[in-house]
Image (cartoon, rainbow, N blue to C red; front, side, top):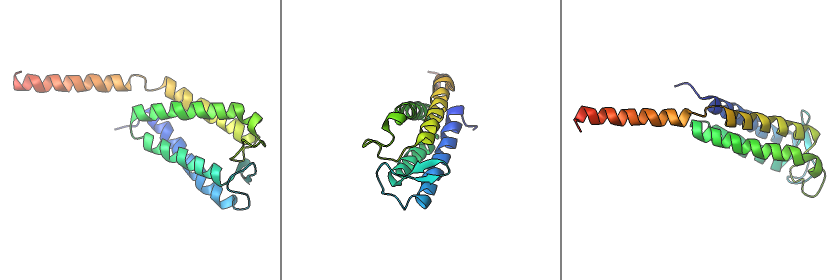
Length: 149
């Protein structure tokens, strides 16, 4: 069965964020696990806590990708959180609230990721559950007709 758009996007983002979380541990051993400091992974600052967040989000997206409705809900939720984090990031960077070592590149990435996840979640696969429900009802009606009830 082909994947829905939401499932495909959740799986793709999930794989990327999981790999980023794992790769982050290769570069972040020189900074505190939690705090304003991070080591660069390409242009994004990461620390241990940031890596754990990427792993949790990545695995969550991968697991959610198995069902369209779950993928859609998780895409919307993660998209909203990332948009909020991207918008608040400039005010958080370098403050006591910055526990995961954010930088400007992180803020832009969160805004783009959030917009894509939220957009796909809101606009794609809207009728998937309705089509599945209608197919289920047709199946029930066919079984009843076969039994003569």
